[in-house]
Length: 341
Image (cartoon, rainbow, N blue to C red; front, side):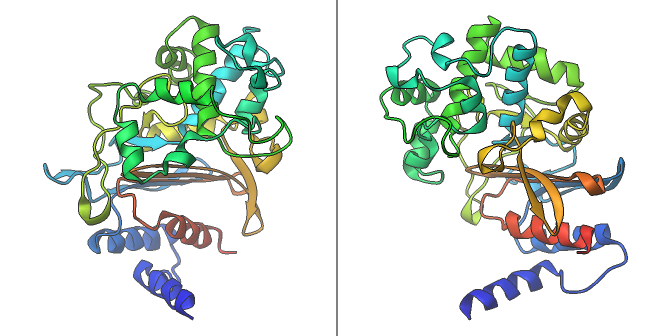
């Protein structure tokens, strides 16, 4: 009964019980109510069939300086970074610089014997068995913040990874691993001969024409500040390269362009699901009777949702710089309004 009541209160606060002839207006009103109640700050972009239905910012990118969050605000998109890391690896594959079925030990120095059976493809699909560093630290814990604000955090992740046992035989199970994508970033550096951030830019971001997207680097400007409970600001995470699991910064417009480019025939393989419904940087599943492509991103202070319903040519992008916002509920209700199942 308490759970039902809690859900009802959320729906009432979202204002999604009433119908509307224009779902974008209702979604705008819903996000405005959440913003006014202190439960949302960020931006949204909704497009259908190449037409933008809603593109708007809410709240503040920086509360202390009263800088509004706008559609062009740059935002830490966290695990959506994996799409770009995966595509960089595929580009190198297409150049015959690496092979997905080859052991990662062919591309990594100081490779443990237990990793001999792990292939590049296993890392891409989260089927390597290499434990996830983030799960051990606890995403919102004090230990996580202390660890991830250190400049040597990425180096320490790789060092610890070499000491850990595999959780299962590679290729037999799906288990999401941020560590696997940090290792992929190291492979990109080794194979391309470039620093990871540069490789992603040259091979993926620049050819895609994304003007306001890049892996985070010290001194990067125009990026929203992240907040947690009671609008407490989150200290900047180091996200030192090669951090291909979560270091990307982007904008609504760039992510929308990216999502549209992914529909090209030559990129179709990214949406072919393996174990766990994971493709290359995307989860593929079904919601409301429609095929859905989705990935979320989550860091202390930052939430992101990127959803595509390919059959409806519908794209939903949500940014939020408040890590306790009910974004899963919001994105679900947005989808229901837009799909009218």
